Image 1 (cartoon, helix red, strand yellow):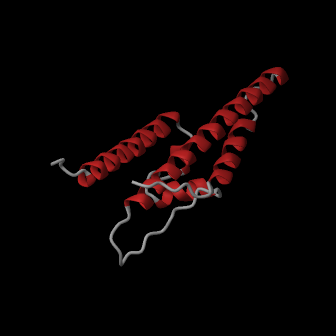
Image 2 (cartoon, rainbow, N blue to C red; image 1 turned 60 degrees about the vertical axis):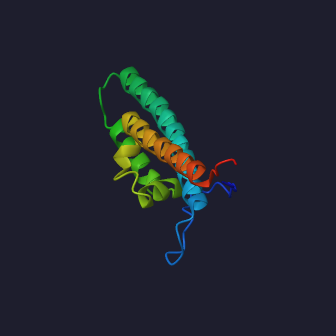
Image 3 (cartoon, one colour; image 1 turned 90 degrees about the horizontal axis):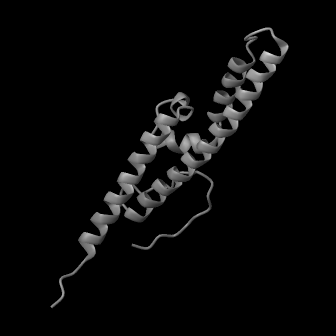
Length: 134
């Protein structure tokens, strides 16, 4: 199977609905989805750092929860929904909402699903293309 790495812009590569399914395109889309998950892992990690800082600020002020963290969470959700990476994962039906991306457990589940699909495609392709030796 030949794999051509296209620009990493988190866009789904369309397939011609009139033509047979191209496993190379499917594989590239799954690899793009893996990159999108890595991207959201980085977003989540950065967000957790900011949340800890906001919690520390509220503790320093001594006023308790003043809504900074919930406002920040809502802003992150709105921003995430506007990213091409979110659109890719949603278009591939790998996530149902932005909340799925802000949960490490959900990210792990989707990552496992993608890896399983890639492994399955690779083994199917190698089995179907192997010829018996004479």
